[in-house]
Image (spheres, rainbow, N blue to C red):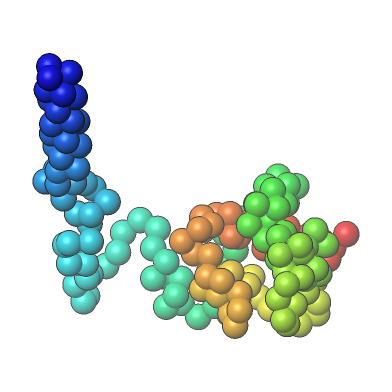
Length: 162
């Protein structure tokens, strides 16, 4: 008889532990991952001048008049090569010919960056294409820093020069 009461007590205890463990935790609503989605997105007020680096300046400027602020030198080429390897090589390939490992699955293939069509573009036009995308090219403005995008262009120019 005592044995039954002990088993019954253990059963009740297990049930109580289970029920309190499955209880809704109101603290879950306070998680940072949930809170940002509850607040409305604030939009920039019309007429305010942005300060610091702003993609809006590049978006509004005619790409044909944009000039590369990075000096064309061996250091810029080397750094551009590193950044090209980080952000571009998987689609455009080691030789920038559009034959990257990921790019092989695309139809049409990614652009040959050493083609005369691409190389005839100004640095500003290339910067604009990299930053804001073109056709299937993804916009990289939020992924690659402004300085690195200019260095990638210098590296691409160096590939044609060599």
